Length: 167
Image (cartoon, rainbow, N blue to C red; front, side, top):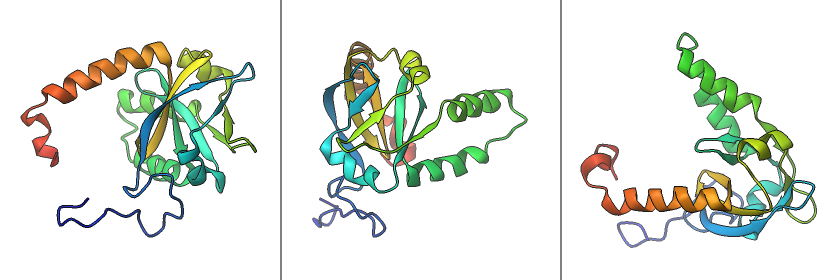
């Protein structure tokens, strides 16, 4: 519910209900990856990705990011604005873009995670698929347990640090 009690509604240009009524990917789902590197994405995420596909790339903290094609294009625009004169930004952009691969969902709602991304994120059979606002993250289940516990601790104990960002 919004501050005035009205329901939040997905943006006008959003044609799917992948994000429910809040306009973002949300939730945590246990999944398995088959021997060919395919993983079924949660049904609630698929509709947003079926029409134009998605882009998979390396994510921070050793996971795989999955972006809708539209959100990938927006993120790429932001990345292009990073200063090329700064070594850190050049390295960041190299890792982000070199690991990227466009994907279409197959008839069962699966994406194939390329070997280089599986290796990067130590993805094996048991995975966790997480909605994180504008993107999806795919995690090694053991790694997710560690990262999630750390994030929950930060979240539970946060004070004024995010107030500058309106949170």
